[in-house]
Image (cartoon, rainbow, N blue to C red):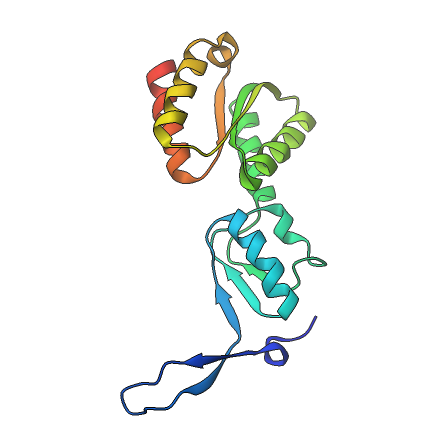
Length: 181
């Protein structure tokens, strides 16, 4: 892997008030994006040109592959650790029968997959696994309200686990409280 100093990419800088000429400035890193899906897309590009990318909230375990994402760094641990902590909590409270909901993107798919794997090692059963696509939040709420209310498996679950972007997860939590609690 090359160092950031060896891989600087020149870009034009807008002149400040004291100058009417353009100058060249070297960019050595990009901060962001927030979501794992966006970070995966941009990490391919930035790795190809050797530009360091630092994400503050992309947690997908895919981004941990140093052979593919050579210049991707993060300030937050990957979902692998999040999932282990979640399963530790389930084990501690003896929650052995859970329902799993996730968004139809890399964060939701990989999060659910990791949780299924970790739960199976600790005798925690996945009663139900449901993926939802990103639509208007009202459509998600309407669809899942009926699904949760009319599904006896969900109602017998100890816990509903959600892997989704925060605003979609929040909507699903509100639906769950109304339907179950």
